Length: 371
Image (cartoon, rainbow, N blue to C red; front, side, top):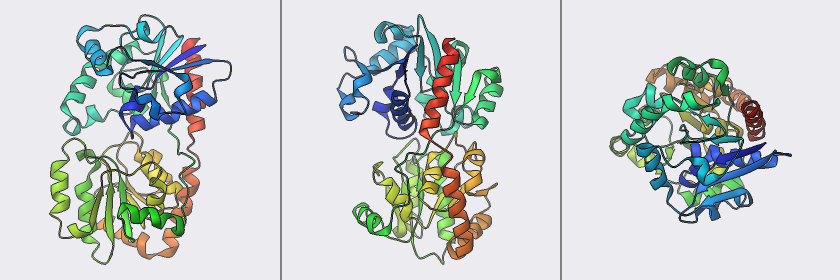
């Protein structure tokens, strides 16, 4: 069996779908056995050099920029993907959309339906692209992969897809996410400008993440003489969120880290007094699991799949009561037994998420699709 895996998101995005694509590609290579694996991407500017571990398996297409081909797909339905990538038995597209394809079986990963559930939180161009293509994509897919059982049910219900065609395959927590001792973490924190103690959240600055509520919680924790660290790139409609952060009475204790490298994240998680996420909706949510793996207690909303994915290892909040969140966070910060119990639960829970298992289950979907 020959599989072609589209790794374009790995070149364009560091987090989210980009991380999923990179991590999965590495494990697919390791588990390919007697099967043939091709990694395909449009690489007009030579960006695959930044993915050295994938390079031996990459077939880069350098004749035309990827954005030109994407526009042609949207408006003309041409050229066929396989006319550039070559013939394979199975093609896996990890970013919601199946491009024009003449032959072969298509597998697509639809990570969530946030653009349908919360269209007001989606960037307009992305919303138009996904809303205009998603029904055609699920119709043409031989198999659909998604990140959680919650999302599998949503895809079946909202897109009217037979649930048996949708395969929930959880993402993994990379082996680099382990508790980092203070003597190793502190130099990294100093370089980032982070001072202990601090509360941490990680994610793109966008309305869906509900960051103004986190600022409100921080303002209510008057007895916490520390900082709130918000690590994530600016996303759609980020300006009002930054305005709220900067106008806070505690603005001097709120730090926005627009960029933290993958190598720095374990230290950033490990140094936090608590990790907090109040997202309205997540298709999966890697940061809470990564924080757990680093031995940091997690308090999380139940938005989207978070109850399923983070819930067993987190202090799970079922609504957005400021009093309830503040009380729970204060308990985590001040009650050593409560904190110890939550840390232990989180460590045990995070161990159940492995990229190796993600790849193993993905290969199984490929074989079923090719049969």
